[in-house]
Length: 212
Image (cartoon, rainbow, N blue to C red; front, top):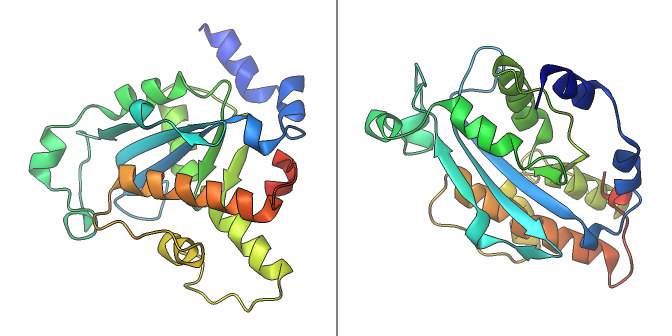
């Protein structure tokens, strides 16, 4: 793709992007993304690993999942404690741009899903820009935001820790994963999204825009 096409895709919202919001949420394709980070500041901290899990027509596409470790991380900080990723794991990884290019090729026709969009997409947007990979997603959904709105509509008091991935999954009686990395968390988020959509729809059509 040329520079002009990349810039146009980044700044111009195609008509199909508006149409996607009016689509049945069960009939569109998604890409669930999770990152492991050295910290919470997108301007200073680094992406340690990135993973994604595709969903198509309510089915998680196991064979198309990907998980990359960034071998260019300069300071792991507490990553060995929180993520179990050490310097040996980093050395076996790939350059971040390689992972970003692989991800960028999948974004044209998929809605992105995160658990905490503000954090992860904030890091990804900067990383894409630094790599010269300008991209504007069709749409972005956030399972944390979906759950917040669902609980608020039901009149629940929303505690500070009630919107973590594990807390959200527990409300849908989804099992807890024993190990935590970007891939298992992306899978956990994909399962949560499907549970949320089915709970909210209750067997009726549900538009993408109603999950935003």
